[in-house]
Every structure is written in C-alpha cells, then in structure tokens.
Length: 246
Ligand SMILES: NC(=O)c1ccc(NCc2ccccc2)nc1
Image 1 (cartoon, rainbow, N blue to C red):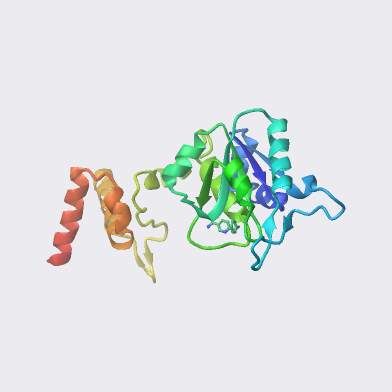
Image 2 (tube, rainbow, N blue to C red):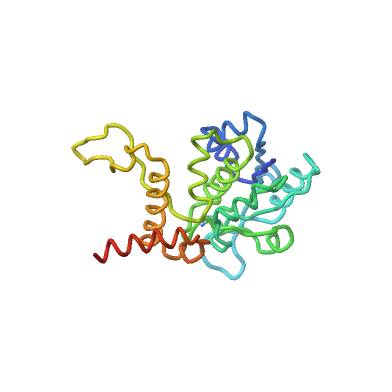
C-alpha cells in the first residue's frame, strides 16, 4: 500500500510512522509513505501557501494552486490510482470499519489542512472523501493523518505478530476489549481473577467475552446496539444481569 501525505510539515508524518508497528510495516515493504509540501510548489518569492478568507473573518485559508501542484507531483511520481482523503472536523467519523476499507486500497493521498482549512473549490474538485478522527479541532490535519496511517498500517497482511493481532481481533467484532492482567498474581492493588489462573481455556474465553460484552454495555451501549451478538453472547449478558440483580 502506498500513502502520499500532502502537508506543510512533511517530517511530522514520517516521524509518527517511524516507530513500532508502522515502522515495521514500512521496513517490510507493506507500506510506503511519501510526503509532499505545498510550500515547495508555491509561486512567488514569498512562496505563499495561504491567504485571507473572502468574506472577512479571522484566520487564513490554504490556497488552491500549491495544493493542486502538490497533488499533481504525487500523481506524476506514481500513476497508480489513489483515493484522496481530506482530514477535517467536517469529515465522516473514522471507524474501525472505515479503517478496514481504507486498508484494502492500493493507494491513499492524505491531505492535511492548516489554519482554517483549504479553499472549498479544491475539496470539490479533488477530494474523494473527508474524514474526521473525532469531534475536536486540532492545529492541523497531520495528527489525524498519522492516526489514519497507523490504523491502516496495522491492518496490512504481515504487519502484526500473533500477540499484536490478538489486540486487533478484540476490536474487530465491534466490542470493547476485556481487562488484562499479568504478574504478580497477588498485589497490594488486588489479586488476578481466579478464572484466569484456572487453566480452563473454555471458561477463560467465556469470562473474557462476558467482560467485553458487559464493558461495552456499561461504557458504550451505542456500540452494543450495532454489534451482531450471538445467542451465546445474549446468554452471557443475561447471566451477568441476573447476578447483578441477585
Ligand atoms: N477531527 C479531525 O479529524 C481534525 C482534522 C483536522 C484538524 N485541523 C486542521 C483543519 C482545521 C479546520 C478545517 C480543516 C482542517 N482538526 C481536527
């Protein structure tokens, strides 16, 4: 998978992707990252990349032409078709399902806005979809782009080892993860749940699934509504409710 990032801070994404799973995915050739800086494509001796907003108001808006030239440079570098994604608070929410969809793409171009954003005409002409990593405003789209890079990199075949893919799997079914424990068994902060020490793997799997279901019910009931629960899942939730009521 190839990801091109258009950003005024090209090193930012390269640094974010240089560590851990994403760094390994790049090393293994599962993912290639390329950065394009609109300032390199800006005209005039001030090499402007932004200007005042028409209609007045505070802040600056990123100019069309340096962005357009950056995208053209990315396409000239590799003719492979790409999905152009603009990271902004006005975008559709990034979910694990969306990350899975993007991870299946051959190529993404991630457009990072600064200031108040970019000229709407460029969005209409060149952007395939706007994505938001959450309902908050950041000083630039770079952190949001780094989140997308991380989320899709870990979904590339061969990116995760067995332990890491276990984490991934626990979120794949749309539920929250169960609690985790490690040494020591006894600690001033409490003991490890006995079931995890039982060696009874069926019982352990049952307990973990029940914990995921209950946590999701308690913390994110919206996710529970969307999750496709099995009959066994419903029985686990009912058993917990009964125990709570008792
Ligand atoms: N929630 C997000 O995903 C996000 C993305 C970018 C961003 N800041 C850059 C920007 C500001 C205004 C308009 C367009 C882009 N803040 C938050």
